[in-house]
Image (cartoon, rainbow, N blue to C red; front, top):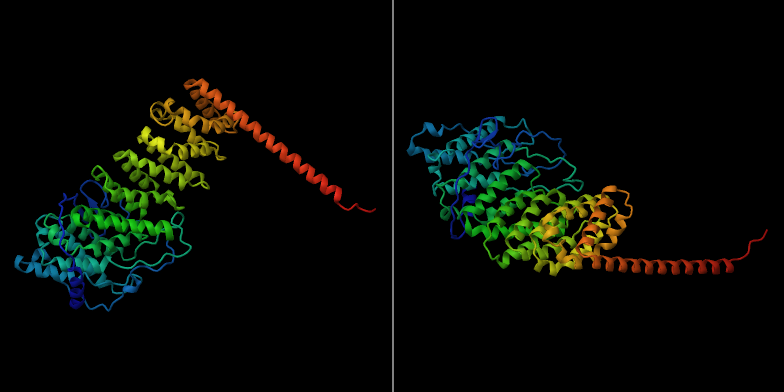
Length: 498
């Protein structure tokens, strides 16, 4: 066991020097003997959300991450409590307990080695309890950091099994991690280590290195939502504490998104990664760097493409609007991307896209509108004329937004750009749409533009009438041609005999 730990520690000690950044410690969390975690702010999870450690869900048959990690378990011996040991011997005992907690058990067989599993869990709980106060955190010395990271890595850094082909994240319940009784407490311990003021970032960066960060990001594909909650908090804290890792973490997240969008369209942690990014983007300095703009165009906007976009759209929309709030010019590539990836075959997704689009339009100025008015208004005309009433209705609700109507893209100032494009579907909806709400809203919008500029309205009505007449003439000629073809075919057909 000691030989294995020394190998892991050597691997964790190979990173170069970086510049640190300090963060404030979060609310303290406690894990009791039953595995329930609480916070002093009334929450039940690392982020203050409702606790999910007691979730009971139907399970699908699937390989679990610890199945291939069995090892020959040696008999574990009881160790004295840290608080009952003298200060001179406490660090050595702490190291022994870390070695004990580095043993991995097979949880697929609930009857195997119950004593060892219980002993490891109780030891982990003792470690968490010991470092739960500032005095106990003084144990986080540089000499123990290799042992701490070796224990954490051997427990949480693992290859996740591939998802089954028939797995549907929108329909199927997740398979929960069977080793959670140990895994949860390891995450609690590591979270206290990361946020501790006793842990000097300049020293710890040699052990919490880029390879470890990459392993943490890979774990976001875990099906277990409880694990992703911890990973979200831990990665955010690492990003805040280790400034030198920030660019690497952003690039690693970008790579996850690239593979998700263009290869697999399967990943369980996109929503959690976007939550972290929402906070990161909020802290971007102005003017935005070229790297940050590239991240928007290449990594975030294409996330509108996957079929499962509704599962993470709320977090994605928040990240997108953060960009537009900081720099309105970013609305141009965003709107172009949204129109490009528009979910034409799914009405419910079109509605949530329209919700996001409304927020962007509120933040966009006239300069940006001049660059995107053609794809934007052409798309709006199609959405207004949608066969699904909810899409048409949600599009018409844009005119209920006072800012857009008075000062935005739907205002009198831009009527000459929008009305010629949308007059047709508005006119058709106003003449007797089967849904009375859509019909009434369309009539109100037409009246609004009539009040804005009657001459423009009459011109659009005349052009629409001429266009409709031309289309009717073309259709009539086509029908006449078909009748001629049918007559010729009938004349050449052999006559039937009695």
